[in-house]
Amino acid sequence: QVQLVESGGGLVQAGGSLRLSCAASESILSFNTMAWYRQAPGKLRESVAVLTSGGSTMYADSVKGRFTVSRDNSKGTVYLQMHGLKPEDTGVYSCNAVRASRAYWGQGTQVTVSS
Image 1 (tube, helix red, strand yellow):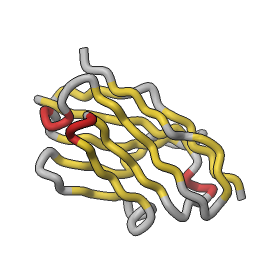
Image 2 (spheres, rainbow, N blue to C red):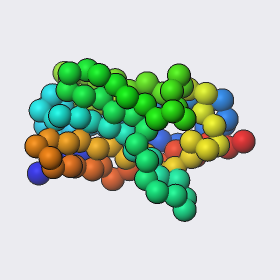
Image 3 (cartoon, rainbow, N blue to C red):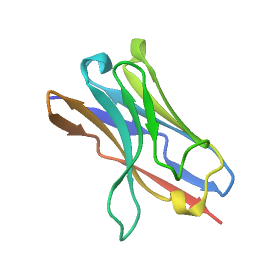
Image 4 (cartoon, rainbow, N blue to C red):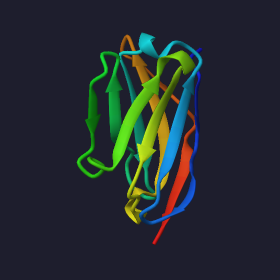
């Protein structure tokens, strides 16, 4: 069973930075995509950043230029570096991995941005 474990969330002031980590129990290169999603209170979960096995990245318009997704294959970890955080970035951030049309999720980590 694939396990994804997120860490790095917390409380930060607007304009601050955080780096989230997602450690996978299997080689991250075995997944077609790995992604970060977030869910704000009362809202649907949305995709924030996607990283393909080939290294391509895609971002939600709301985070372009502020967030960067990357990976360290040797550590089996995917990162989400977040700069210029805004109160609207508040939510539970979850790691997602897809392989052979099957999706795996982490438990999520809370990010709270105060104004």
